[in-house]
Image 1: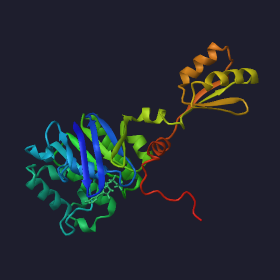
Image 2 (image 1 turned 90 degrees about the horizontal axis):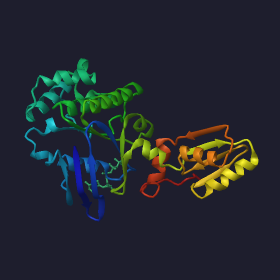
Image 3 (image 1 turned 45 degrees about the horizontal axis):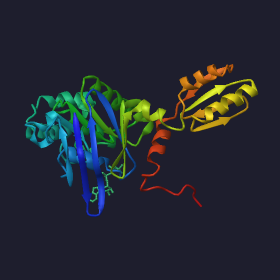
Image 4 (image 1 turned 90 degrees about the vertical axis):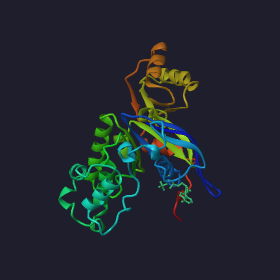
Length: 306
Ligand SMILES: Nc1ncnc2c1ncn2[C@@H]1O[C@H](COP(=O)(O)OP(=O)(O)OP(=O)(O)O)[C@@H](O)[C@H]1O
């Protein structure tokens, strides 16, 4: 478990991370989302003790990361896949990492096999493609067989097969009861991978909720109710207006946002309105995310190109 309490980081006049209070629990994949510059990498760096908080603290199972006797066996992380010695072979890179971190060297071939780079383990890291570098970075994260894993943009540069592999790896690590904390800008991928979402903007917490809740809370999640009779449709519309965020009327149906489908069904029943169809159209995670972060985007682009 990772616990952040009032975690704050300032760089001169910039507040990169602003009083974050958060618990990242085991047994699930927690997606860490936010616009560019929101403070995701800085938060991860502070959890690993690579950056010192200006205020507050980040604890790993109740202690600072560096206070664990074998930190690599507590938290494995992929923060920057390019941080490799270019002339060292993949295997030697991991052997050096194992030796300096108190991890048995026998684990190296095991993790190379897990990430699928065992056949090219002798190749220099500098000759690796972006995707192979990512896999090697993931191998490093798995080296200490840690209970907690943190990945900053792990699918960067991976081909579709690799993206799927990372998704399955994270799902299986969390199914084993580990804590998996992963940042990504790929919403479609996060929708398939994460159970819980933490969204930050300008260093502040915007949302911490199960993914289904984040999507259900979007105004783009709508209930569609098809009522053939015009008078009945108008009556239902009037009744819904007081509860809904928005009710739109089309040829033979109402499109309702901000009211759960069960409630729409109950109201139709109460009014004796005959319904031919009652369904929910879920927002995509991307739509929900855009809504949540609309006010926090620092590096936006003009909507139209002249
Ligand atoms: N070493 C540093 N010195 C000064 N400012 C920094 C430093 N590291 C990060 N920042 C600033 O802190 C803020 C948060 O940056 P951070 O890299 O944590 O965001 P991020 O959410 O990981 O962004 P991205 O999605 O682009 O990777 C940004 O405004 C960034 O410019």
